[in-house]
Image (cartoon, rainbow, N blue to C red; front, side, top):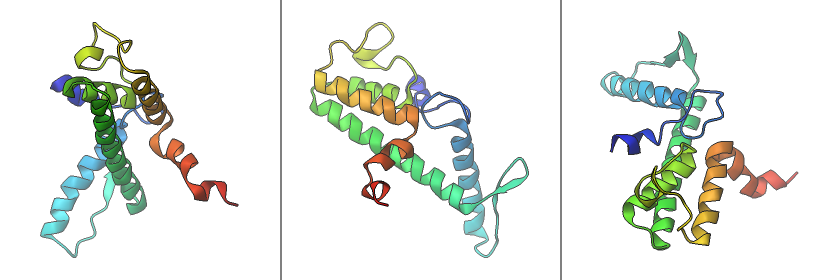
Amino acid sequence: MIFFILLFFGGCAGSTGGGIKSIRHLLLYKNSVLELKRLVHPRAIIPVRINERAISPEIINNVLAFFLLYILIFVFGSVVMSLLGLDFITAFGSVATCLGNVGPGMGTVGPISNFAHLPDAGKWFLTFLMLLGRLELFTVLIIFSPSFWRK
């Protein structure tokens, strides 16, 4: 279970590793703690700070949107892989490892196995998830937005 949770941790900001970057995890944690303080003191203005610098609410919203989108894609991908005939552990493990670009997954795609036994549709889908994870979600998904192609 610990290794499965670690599949969701990416590299540091600016690294080529996929997954949810550590700075995003830090911002989510700090915002969650401060949100509890804001509930106790609803009129207080308490900004999230990193290295003594206040982080704008827009950046916090972007990080929250990224995290939500990442989890939704993970759940959707796991359902797709389950529908292709994979067991629960293999479906979750394969999607987590491809979306995070972190190496071996869990189940039959674990450290002592590979992805060769997966159906071709599953391999193509996981390849797309690898691109999403490596190139960042918003960067790839914006290409599929109609507003991106309009002048």
